[in-house]
Length: 485
Image (cartoon, rainbow, N blue to C red; front, side):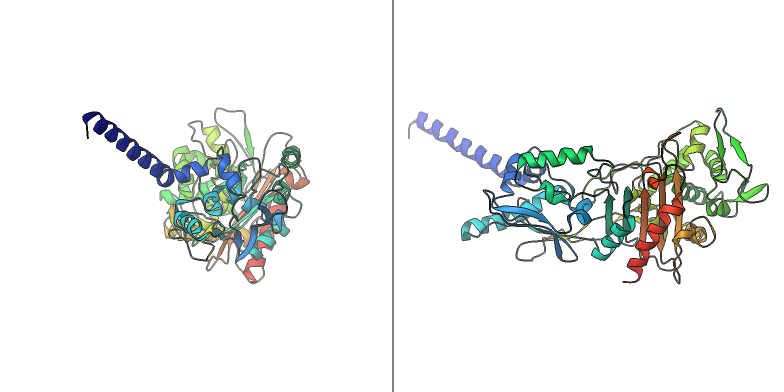
């Protein structure tokens, strides 16, 4: 072989090696990243050439692909579409999938690295390609109870297992039917999507884990936790009890909801201030603790960071401030405090779980079309972190039970079951409707469930209602349904 031919052969060999390496990197190294990119239209179209895997709740499909009679091989169908829309999302013909359809797209479409051998086997055997199925942590009975209890209200319900982080119910209203966004007519999908964008109540916004609201008095749980965790306070520590409080360096005057003192006496305990949900003592306590301590406690519960459930949640926020007036207002869940329903469920769950906050998740596991579990996808409880010591958590839990038994969270009482809880009535502006909250857990002696309810738009009553009147009964119905199973 002459020198020139040898050089050409070496160059060609290197080209083949480079091609092999680059294709291997694409197929193995970055395939999941490319498939997950919403701009990758090829992945979406490939989804109609395979039987997309099902999304399951309680072992039954809530989203599945069935043979289509048009030019596409399969049609995506959603069982009880509005009931599970906040979980499944939708898989459109001309856009990016949402919800679990988007977050688990690689598994459902069979394009993940874990499905490589299955894809190869299908090619060799001539089998029709299929995607993997995703089993959710959703309890169908809990989901139905939450959906029914929320009724026509605008808001969300989230139910979690404190000990594991499993999300048992995830409801957002107003809901929508994902079937209307999965048809194979692009013009029809676009028209439906635009109508939903323009609809009252923003049905396409997931109010369970993306929508942010001022948490109102539910945030007092965080402030009380910070106080007890500091070691400088107990539940019996006394705070000044005036009828009104002019904030330092500000013209703002803080009042309790009753526009009176927080019970009789010149001072009031932290426990009583929580029981009666008084703003003034909590504002005073917040200014004593200072923003840094409150922020540190809030972040131990999950504020200021996103969770992946596997959809990415909005970050609930508690911004720090050196302004005493701002700290005071933030101490009863106003100022710039913002939270999702999921975040407030995690606050109650962490307290109920002895101070340990678990990572929340919607996925129980993934199975191949042959029902073989996909390695590494089975649900395993994981700790997010320790928010409180067991002793402090036990004190907080007892105070939350007192809130329901003897305080202003009484509408969550359940006969024969001890319930812990906290209500919230958050302001949004001088003339804007309130946001109404309840978060809590049951049964108190061995908490199995933690719940958060948020009702936006004042529950249709503007500024005339409160969290105990509207959100409390919704939480009660959900807890009753799962406790009676």
